[in-house]
Amino acid sequence: MKKILFAIAAVVVVVTAAVVGSSFYLLSYALTPDPNRHDMDSAYAQLFCDYPDMRQWTDSMRSGGLLRDTFVVMPTGERHHALYARADGAHGRTAVIVHGYKDCAVKFLYLGRMYQHDLGWNILMPDLHAHGLSDGDAIQMGWLDRLDVIRWTEVAEELFRDSVCKTQMVVHGVSMGAATTMCVAGEELPPYISRFVEDCGYTSVADEFTVQLKEQFGLTAFPIIPVAGMLCKMKYGWSFGEASPLHQVARCRRPMLFIHGDADKFVPTWMLKPLYTAKPGYKEVMITRGTGHARSFHDSPEDYQDKVGAFLKR
Image (cartoon, rainbow, N blue to C red; front, side, top):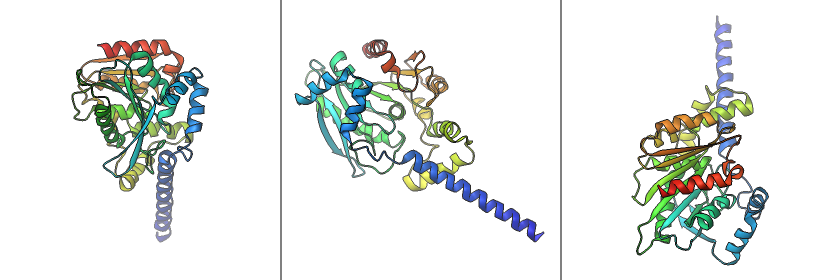
């Protein structure tokens, strides 16, 4: 009997160690920043590789001093970075554009050009915590980032305030930036934040990590996701359970445009339906055909711009 109990105890210890070890690995794998995140030359090179026609506008904006850097100190004491640019005739209309996972503002300047050059809106594009030139030691998957983006909307309002026209602001995010945008949308916000665009955001951190566990490692969510969520709470102050764009979007009363590619496997397209259903009030949707993750603008730039432009006018 003692031998049986000892064997059972040994198995429990081994399984527990394996689960805890796997959970720690998940946290490290998912939340460790890109070691090359400060390399802006590489970021511009990637932008021009994906969007060759971006070079002329970008070079013109940079050489003319129109695309500028700004830094702010967050309440946490961390120093965060953003790019910004004014648009002639914007009259207070401003887009805060939020990049995706392990990316930076530079790589999303294609959206900056769309807003600033084509739609005539001022732009502010932050580097999220632990991305680009912003401080931080761990990726926050959009949850605590919502507080930083709200601070950036305040900065944008101060930068672009118009003496005649009221500020009108849209928050537009892609992938993890879209999750951040939806998390922002569920908070109490100033009236000048008038609408949101979320492009291929996930329902929750737990759901997204569950998808990636299965796709990349062939593992099931239980018990790794719950344990990793508890470890995340202990180490970083937030849990997978609370990091839910789905819960946040259900609290949003301002207009939102949902965009997703129907061939998205990284943030599966099925996540769009519960998000769209949960959103009360005015909402629109755009599904791009044959498009993978975060490629809707790349694959259908004219349709994308037309849809966003029309949504902003409503």
